[in-house]
Amino acid sequence: MPLVTRNIEPRHLCRQTLPSVPSELECVTNITLANVIRQLGSLSKSAEDIFGELFTQANTFASRVSSLVERVDRLQVKVTQLDPKEEEVSLQGINSRKAFKSSTTQDQKLFDRDSLPVPVLETYRTCNTPPPLNFLSPYRDDGKEALKFYTNPSYFFDLWKEKMLQDTKDIMKEKRKHRKEKKENPNRGNVNPRKIKTRKEEWEKLKMGQEFVESKDKHGPAGYPSNMVYQNGSIGSSESMDGNCYPPPPQTDSIVPPPPSFPDDSLPPPPVEFRLPAAQGG
Image (cartoon, rainbow, N blue to C red; front, side):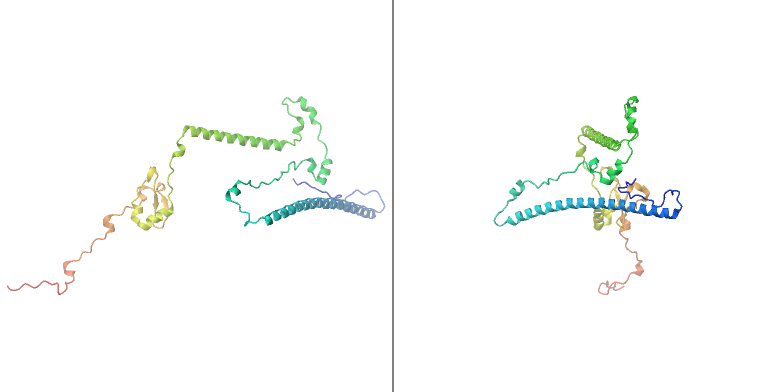
């Protein structure tokens, strides 16, 4: 729900009941001119308020800038007076000095009654007071204030407080749970984690040869299934595959091709110098 800061009144210039006059057109004209003048007065008042707030904010900003300029000037004088050639500072001396700590002050009570803008404060003052329902509080059996059922300014604060207390209880409960698990399993943190397989290691094995990849066992160490590595470098889990989907292991006969068989008649004749001498006699 938007909150209107400033209202320009009157909003409707001609919407008014006419009295019994002989000239109604002249009466409407006079009423409209009077409402225009009133509207201009309301606008000038709002403009004065706006420029007054801008003037206050500009003065605050100017004072902060002037104080910052003075601090920068003092720092510049100190820096120019330092001469690293004459005054050597050791590393131990630098570590022994205190670190810079800003002395900023945090603003509080930003949304209280004193910090309300003037237009909002005027609108607040025009509101009607709540009914005196607090007189009915003594007649309630639960001990709650009757006025809080009509208006409760602390509702959101109470809601935030309940949420923060619940979060604190959840955190403490989680810490107690971790302490209990640590007492029951004291050697839980000493378990060696399983080595994570990466694509880079699989590619390194592929460079050495396909037989180093296909000769792996079906299950790796610690009972975890090994990954399948294909020719394109992709890795697939063996859990999502059946035993029939694995490629067959390479056979020795299928890797080494058999020598070609040639009949005796198709062999080429040996060279002349290697021919046996022909049988003589007989």
